[in-house]
Image (cartoon, rainbow, N blue to C red):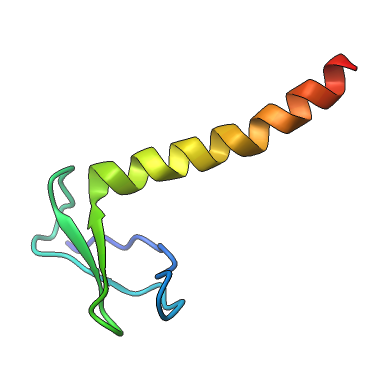
Length: 66
């Protein structure tokens, strides 16, 4: 079984990633399959994505209060 995660590479914009194992762990280092750019660990990527999502959610909540 293989895992497919689509993350845009900030360097080449490819979404194909390489994984060391069939299942992704939080400590796995995610690498772009196209250019070899290191995106960090799965845990750090999730944290960045959650922060970005919160930033998107926050302005819309402020607009509703006004």
